[in-house]
Image (cartoon, rainbow, N blue to C red; front, side, top):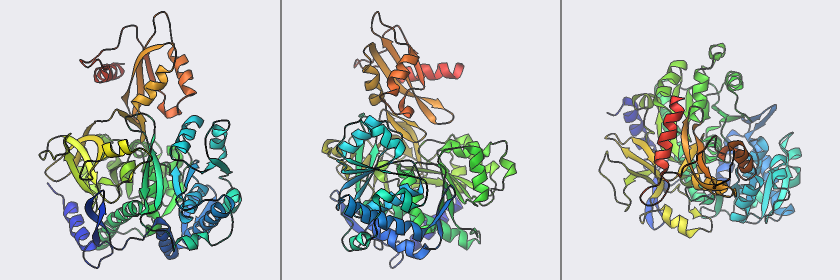
Length: 565
């Protein structure tokens, strides 16, 4: 049954998307299908930056340790990066420029500078090993890689085809970004050249097939995704204004998610320009430090993997801090146990838990469940994000299933990525003939159009928002000369949602201790991909009639063993 909040959101959304309104839509063609896009959207992310920075140029934008930078200061720094990349390093329109670094003000300036200079920001996973970084660089044919010292050291001695330029996180942007800094007009000139069809970003995704793929988007897709989030925010702002509940402090967010992931990039970072929102960066998660910053910076929006909100809600020192400014405790990248929803609301009486569902390939746009609606349906990831997202539950043939029945969750919108870089086969497999992206998640929609995710079709593990392809980990285990067979799967984990686990059998007459196998994998995989639980068995692993290893049976058996322990 629809809540009053549902009806209010529908009413205001209809107003804001009407003819002549800010979020009026028009039809555009994507993958041969007509779908809505915004009439008043900027032609590129570079134009988006220029427009909204002008509105908020003297407002604090980034808090990074002791450094505080306004929107205007960040834009000026990014303009110098754009000119430096073009004149000192030869970046041309459409060139892929990798960014391999942790969150910082200078990461943000580098990202903005690449796009403002006409390049394509390729967001390399900062947790990857040197070999994994090199794979991502070559996969998307990056000509330049902007790396902090830690990632540059990982790349040292590893073969790849890009020029690595090292920058620092410390100090003002002019100092930390000196190797890519130059005063000039490249960013201004590119405003006259860049358009919706230009290449904007590549984000890396690990699907069930193993090696990462580069999901590339044009500026139309990226701008559409950001504007769709802004439309939702504008709806809530109008609702709060009608009720006289608008906060009096500047919108602000405590950032605990990596900016190289789509959640950090689109709804958190990029959306903040339109909102005039302050971003307070936390280099490493610590619940006590988060409580301190929430109070000190008067944070209005908290975002992280779902367990982070729960850790704040159950922290023994929570009552020592004034968190009344924070109205939203958002989670994404992993399921949130339904019982956590009520506990978070009880702990933060003036705020609400919120859950988002989107993918790298959808540029973070998908569904959302918030406030009273989330309390009413804590097991749901919410309704399709209006006005752009068309949500469908389809069977293997791409046909809709009856309401309430389980099928594959599919989404169609102008926000969706264009394809996987140099991988047409994977791109075609990802889309239905009528332009729905297949998420690989299984779910159903109830009578109120709320989505419930029940399982995954793809063989992946989601550890704290990080996708891990089981086959990739299995391939590295099989690389050990003494392994006969193995199976990798996810096990429930209170902190990360699930963690990778593996069962393996050594070759006859050989023995591989779990500690030795972990040490072997540490040289080949990023730390978050290494199985947290390893079991060595003497008998052959169970098989299905197809002779494939029965992963479901193994997962069930070891889940029960873990729960019984």
